[in-house]
Image (tube, rainbow, N blue to C red):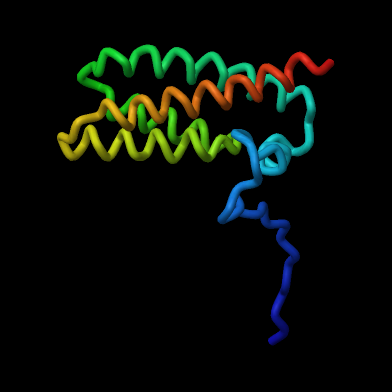
Length: 125
């Protein structure tokens, strides 16, 4: 009985070591299927969402862990791996009952760098 083999196009995983810069644009290109319009839309949404979430996190609301988790996922999706890592550290600090001020400051800085890179890309045109 012959086997039926089918070629499947797999999407590559993010790199183990992201490229230089706050946004891995090769990863973003894969995630947006090289659609420049979609890339701009995703970057615009992430920039606004990340600013809003960091602002909310400064007050350390009851749902701060969930907010950090949300930001972590969004950042990974677009290739903002430094933001994702900082959000993961904040999420872990909150879950562990640790002082969250240092991880929050780190997240704030990572988001600022990512947003600056995004603004540069969006205003290139």
